[in-house]
Image 1 (cartoon, rainbow, N blue to C red):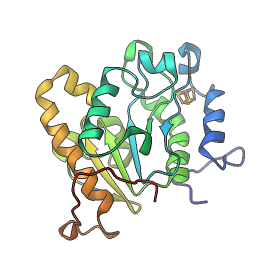
Image 2 (tube, rainbow, N blue to C red):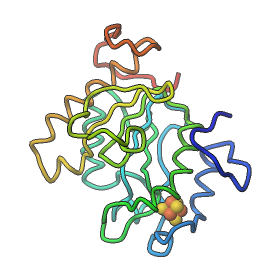
Image 3 (cartoon, rainbow, N blue to C red):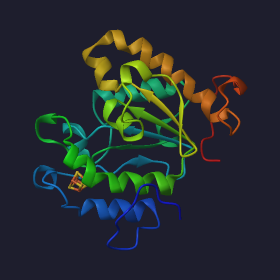
Image 4 (cartoon, helix red, strand yellow):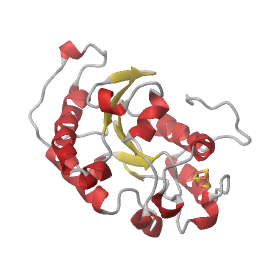
Length: 215
Ligand code: SF4
């Protein structure tokens, strides 16, 4: 199994997403474990070609254990459907698996210790496309780039196509961002059907019909 960025493992890594989610449910590696109600490991199809990575669970996610369960989740569903994609077809997770108190920003120390789980998720799901939602997940892959100048531009990361977009929650606070989100999400369809190399001039377009992301 190919594992990205893992330098220390005290035990053998889990073989399946379900095993990994069980490990996360018991995690006490940072102080967020003291204030969470539920861990929020991820949700969706375990072998999808498309992974979405957000920031951290909020209040609704902490109550349900599911990522993107609140208003930002409803907007995310709307954006996916508008791109011809059902949420059940993708795998969705966050940088952090536990809610930061008062929905504050994730701390670098928390990201550092929790990132092991995300690396394993990427390895196990093995997507061909990752959409980063917001600046924290974009920084994992391209820490020296600014999201405002990079959104909507596809880059290669270890053979995976990375598409950075604004976090849906940002569009709830600033509605002027929503058209940009819609514009960027429309690129997902094209990316999933593009031939395997990264020459964007060689895009294979497809009508906006329902996708099968599991192949
Ligand atoms: S945020 Fe991550 S590292 Fe911290 S307790 Fe939760 S699962 Fe463990």
